[in-house]
Length: 253
Image (cartoon, rainbow, N blue to C red; front, top):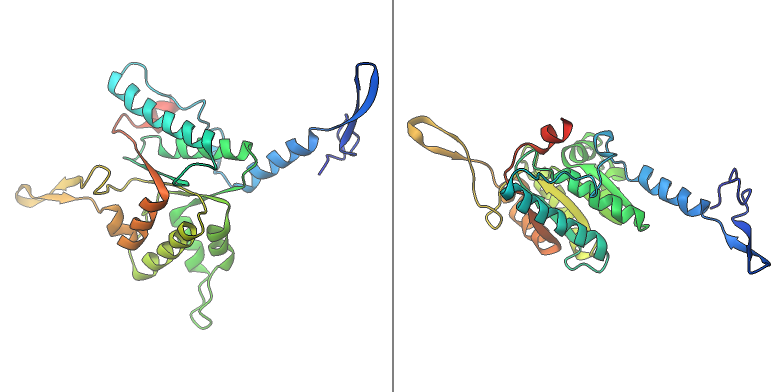
């Protein structure tokens, strides 16, 4: 759809150009620019991450280990965005400690896909579940169908902070339903999680209890269910983020 206020085409969608002394009509770029803006607005990227791109992801140069590991994660993210939608599996899962830069990279990938014309939608995992549950009507058995259907049908879904919700049977069933539907229909999912996983770092000690007994963090499978976890690993390439200085703190300096 052309911009009715475009100074080049006056809203017609075509502008007059001269080539080799001949006058011709050429498609105006204003429609493409407007579509790109609509896609970005429709993606619902939070304000904190509206400026996040793969180009401005900060890889530390003063720490050789962090430079190599974070640089590797960035290269994998760039490769996925470059090859999309031919990537197989069709999704990405970023796993790592809080502040590792997972969401920045995930949004950076999303921005690249938006620029290529793919519709994307950002959801915070807890907010999505809260929206679905808050609209639940026990009498009718209905819930917030708009949020639920959006999570199912979005061409590309970014689910941030996966597993950051108290575990209940309802939560497990809901997230399993969303992930299974997307997996079965090959709908790309980009997800981030702070939770450890047996195949991506194993269990991690959260704190030491009485008598020096280690208390382990809940794993991804424990927080979203084994069925959802299995489907997630089936449909996503896993990018393990290294334990480095808090990326948010470093990036804000």
